[in-house]
Picture: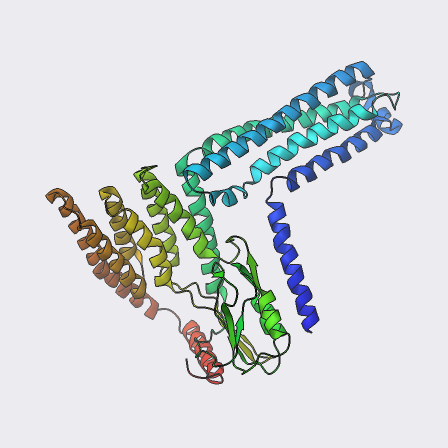
Amino acid sequence: MLIDIRGLLRLERWRRRFQDILTSFWFVPLVIGAGGWAVALVALELDQWEALRDLLGHTFFRRIEPDTARSILGTIAAATISATSIVYSLSLLIRNLAASTLGPRLVQDFRQDRLTRLALGMQLATFTYALTTLYYLGTFNETRTISIGVAIGFVLVALSFLVVFVNHISDQVSVDHIVARVAGNLQDVLRSNVREAEENREPRLPVLSAPDGATIFAEKDGYVTFISYSAITNGADPAVRTVELLVQPGDFVIKRKPIARIDLDEPPEDFAGLVRDAIMLGAARTYYQDIPARFQLLVEIALRALSPGVNDVFTAVACANHIGAAFALLDGRDLTPPIIFDEKRDIVLVPKVLRFDDIAGTVFHPLRQAGADVHTMNIALLSVLGDLVTSSRSDKARAVYLEHARLVVASACRRPLEEADKEIIDKLFERARAGIAEAGAFEEEMDVAEDDAPEDDTAKDDAAEKDGEEKAGRYGPS
């Protein structure tokens, strides 16, 4: 069984590597380019197909002299290889510009751009098609109508991709466009996370008391890029009943750092190695399970914008606005993975807790500290926090937002302010405080509407909660 789990972990590593290869600048263009070579061979065969020639007739199946064909194909090959260099140059230029002005970690986000890879692939496919057809020119003595016509079709498609790509690149130069794309990726992940949480009707166990047993230590260093929770539960020794993870995706692990704890005095043979293999380490943070890394990307852009070397306050304001939109989707939800209970193997896996207030702290504290002396940034932060207080339906979230608003006011008032500026700050803070009362009135209206709803769903939820409490009782107090 342990051998099978380790094999699955190796497959998981290869799957992650293959995903990295898919987003690289070479794999997809080379595959599409190889497709151009294959299409060229098919077109050359169709050129010699007499039945097709009789079916199309001389109108569509004309003979082209070899010298004319060489001229056409040579022109196409030379033009497309030049266009390929243009696409590569523009892509690298935009990457370097974004990395130098907004943040080096944006390069990883730019790798997700599909249009760039498709544009490169179409230029390479047209080049390989023209070159392959030119190579076989003279081998066949008959017509070249289909192969030359397909070459012209490749050119039209490649030119279309080139025009769209240039327009796309012009949009990517805009800082607002880059910030909006990074924020859009974050919001897509949060929507998926919220949707999965709402669709998961299985009862979730409460957080159990930490197992007082053996500790498993890391044997190498790196960032936690992925954790295979199922591998740990499926490959655990039958004697192990509780496993608590002490790290989460995005944490940096050094040698001899505790990464897990079990409820036995000594870890079973090979189980410690299985846990180390299931917690995959890498040289940099990734976005597979590390949602806070996407928040940090927006924070990094804002901090660079607020630095004296850049001094672009309104880019930081745009980041704050998009961060507010992301927190509105989160709305007080913790990002801790659910506790996994395997009834067949009688084991509980407790992931490391990732609380909402911790996420808010890692985002709003750096923005407040960097923008303490920037009046425009303080106004933006207070406006965002005030909107979040009003729109949130979570008492915990509203309390967190109001506390961060109070800290923004304290940081802004440490230096002397004009009376008008201080009045603006006070009004925004009072708006945030008043937002709690407004949100409470809205919740009362929603509660009245929920009281009129059918009781079937409530009964199901009560039964699920009771089931979860019964299962939790087998492993100790919450």
